[in-house]
Image 1 (cartoon, helix red, strand yellow):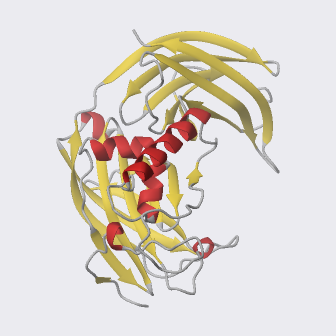
Image 2 (tube, helix red, strand yellow; image 1 turned 90 degrees about the vertical axis):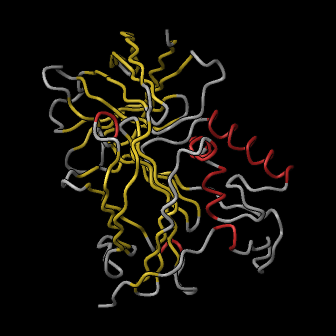
Length: 327
């Protein structure tokens, strides 16, 4: 088995930007691939419009959204995810710039942020020239110095660049800094998703940023597709917002139900964390989203309910739309 070795990180700004025809060059702009977002719902229209405006502004200035003079996959990732740009522009990210190389692949941890019950990691995955992007799927696993595991919520990608959001209560009420242990396993395509080599291991620390939150009681109920859904509460925060959503499972024979939703354009991640003693209510977390047009006005949209059991999931399509304002 090949062993990992440290290698000096390659900054995204130094990577040559290929032209539309695929040849190397130093053109300040290039045709960009559509970004990948991993989650149960698509990016909202407002997020796409804001991202497009950011890209246009950066192009007019001759500077990529990540602050480089030539486009890279890392710039693409930031250009299509305004929340990452907000953290970058505010100086909230720490830049570990740690690289590990094994089995012909190089993984570099570029950015790290902790705050508001959320950890955000940005990394790049370098592949051998003959290996297409579709043949490599990174699988991150994050723990801290005392063994707590932080589950991934939602992610996004653009070419070789990846961002993963982790649910981390310790990044809200815990210590002032976290010692983190990250393992990234690269897996191949197909149903077996076999590992392509040894995990890439990173040990690093990250300060916990102040991230004030605000609990907003909603108490709205909307009915669609014969099902009543209640939005009980939303906790607004700069690095993500959990919401308490309640509904009675339409088919009690199915062992599990979840939903696909977005809050101000940010998709929900995970299947929801059941709340003890709250009946059919669960807490759903949302990734970062750009500020709405009216700072105190928000929209949460449940697009569909998903029932899981034997066979294909059962889908009930809404939408259930909730409008609310923060006091």
